Amino acid sequence: MEKISGGANVRFPPPLIYVGGLMLGIAAERLLHLPRLGLGSEIRDLLGALFVIAGFAISFAGAGLFLRRGTAIIPFKPATRLVTTGIYRWTRNPMYLGMALIYLGVAAFFNSLSSLVLLPLVLAIVQTQVIAREEAYLERAFGAEYVAYKKRVRAWI
Image 1 (tube, rainbow, N blue to C red):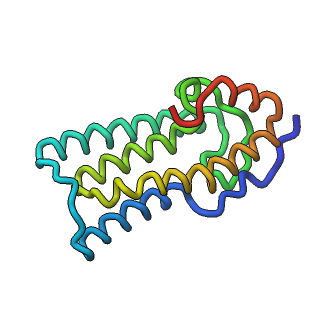
Image 2: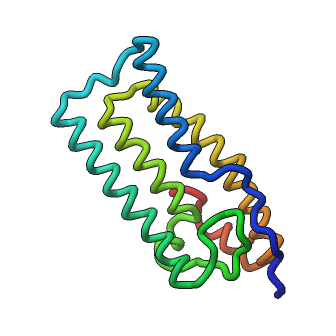
Image 3: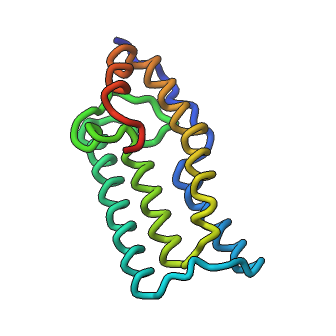
């Protein structure tokens, strides 16, 4: 099957969506004197570290498989092959899942309730503006193979 060129037509780098949500939450909290998460420093640091470490591990596992298979990590570029092994057997979007966990960890480090409140909005933007575009592209590019993969593996977890 000839692969469709052009990539998924994602208009904004996904990591910046996560960073934007975090920064907006932290800035709003500071500028508007909004309530904090209220975690003690030991719990905050432990939770933050666990989420950040897990997030990086999951993201790197996904990105590493893309690199080993020789396909584009950047959603603006065309995919050369469908990756369905390794961590992709459990989640179709490990890099975005990993970024969400990193987001949680950073929000915990900053004790930022506002950032946590914004996380569902961030995830909705990632789902509708990134993942939906990627999935439509992958269906066009890989057809029945991708549709079968979507039926077997959840989008997030």
